Amino acid sequence: MAIHPLEALSASEITTAVKLFREHHSDEQAFFSSIGIKEPNKQDVLHEKQIPRVVRLTGVDQQADGGFVSMVDVTENKVLATSRVPLDAQVAYNYADFGIAIMLTKSNTQWLDAVSARGVDVSSDEALALIQIDPWPAGGYAHDSIPKGHRALRCIAFVREDATDNGYARPIHGLIAHVDVTAKTVTHVEDSGVVPMPTASGRFDSESQSSIRSDLKPLEITQPEGASFQVSGNKISWQGFEVRASVHPVSGLVLHELSLQQRPILYRAALSEMVVPYGDSDPMHSWKHVLDASEYNMGTMINSLKLGCDCLGEIHYLDSHQVTFDGKPKTVENAICIHEEDYGIQWKHYDSSSQTTEVRRSRRLVISSVFTVGNYDYGFYWYLYLDGTIQMEVKLTGIVGISVFTEETYNPAQSPVIGENLSSPVHQHLFCFRLDWHLDGGTNSLFENQIEVMPMSTQNPEGTQFQSVSRPLTTESEAIRDNAPHVSRNWKVVNPASKNKWGVPVAYKLLPAASPTLFAQAGSQVAQRAAFASHNLWATPFKEDELSAAGANTVMHAGQGGLAEITAGNRDIDDCDLVMWHTVALTHVPRPEDWPVMPVEYTGFHLIPVGFFDQNPTLDLPRKCEE
Figure 1 (cartoon, rainbow, N blue to C red):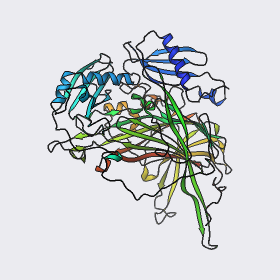
Figure 2 (cartoon, rainbow, N blue to C red; figure 1 turned 120 degrees about the vertical axis):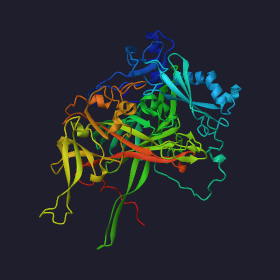
Figure 3 (cartoon, one colour; figure 1 turned 90 degrees about the vertical axis):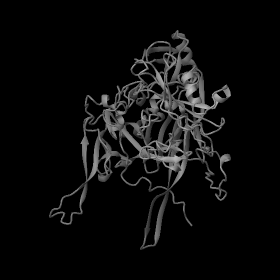
Figure 4 (tube, rainbow, N blue to C red; figure 1 turned 90 degrees about the horizontal axis):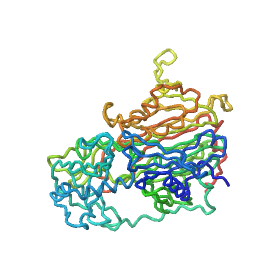
């Protein structure tokens, strides 16, 4: 049986792709950054054509450029093409890059002397093993000692009590190693002054707590007749919804061919890019603005989920197959979790005349994955609801960035206290989602809707009236928009050729969260490299190679290829193959409750049917709550 072109990559396909690449590529020092299925032609998929399985393999080698991108046909067993990436926009970092940076830092005499000056033991391999090095991307603010075009990382460090300690509780503050990965050398050790090492424990495991709650009674989730969804390969079916789920190296959790009652809604929906800019003036943080998705290949940092911890109920898992930096297949078991959740009431009404009540329970299908990028953990949760609503919820947890402060250096406006001599910088998390629409199987248009307060008049003598107004957004420049909660602004995707029973074109609306945009000044390196974050909405006509909100290759880049450049031509987006880009964000002002591990914070958005149905689509739900 032919493999569907959107099925997840298998371990055997990875082995085949790497073997074919190495036979075609003479450089034995190639280190791989990622592997994934090349997105097949959209129309070929929609028309169910037989499509070869083509693998996209990226990495670096000994050539003095930004790395390679190789397309390998694992159906016909041949390398189709290998292109080189320019120095000014390189492929994502890989674990060989990180390993080189850590090794170079720990063997640098100047760095070791600076660590020792802070009272940290560096006298043995055992002592050095307790020093945790975190390599950070150097793009945007690469040190002057790094030649232009060289691959670079900044290394910051922490000290553990032992191997199981919280790796971020004891920062070696004021010390940064600038590493030229291309030249394999530490070019500069930045030392802004010795700050005493913190001594308080930062452990958050159960064994380290003085007591554990004993009054929480069991709360069991059971489905004695099994789950209501079915999974075949990576295709999921539930209550009229059908969708394919997979893991992409950059986008992480991806949904393809999402439909409801055999009516298409979205061809592809996934994170496109994210950025985490810090607002603190401290030299340990002022340069931080990682493009976590593309610089690190966030999809390669996916967690293996375990029953009873990350998901509850009747669960089906999907694995993710990846490539290690040296070309071996790696399987992350239980990478995608699929399960159902009760979600309270779907609808209810009490009739006071007849004293009768009608109420139905809601539930949702959950498709989720969790990714750990350094100190932060990000959960991405797609929810499908019985009434046709689709929700994306981002859950942020993990460990906040840390500074050690003294009485003289404490700066609460930019880095509030969270623990003993510890503060955490104010920062943002901005996520840009790419939504490739295929609403009711046709071309789509975009409208902006908001509430307009009507002026005082003879028709509105009390000044109480308001109305919903809608205007079309027909060009890329018109569709660069921001949230406006004060007027209940939302955006609606319409299929002009498909009308409901009432003669109105079917639609879905994007209901945004009350989300900020990027705070960094427009001319800053951050704003140039992450221009997508400067607005909540963008829209483009579909183009096959436009998947990346910040550009296809972002290591060491200055912002080229991102949404600002993509939309510069101001193309027509009216009644087209429409792609919407939506940036959601939260601004994190850390608090003591965020230490030593951060309770989940949330952001996201909803996609809600508007005239997609002729009436409430959940009237047929069974009544199962009799006394």
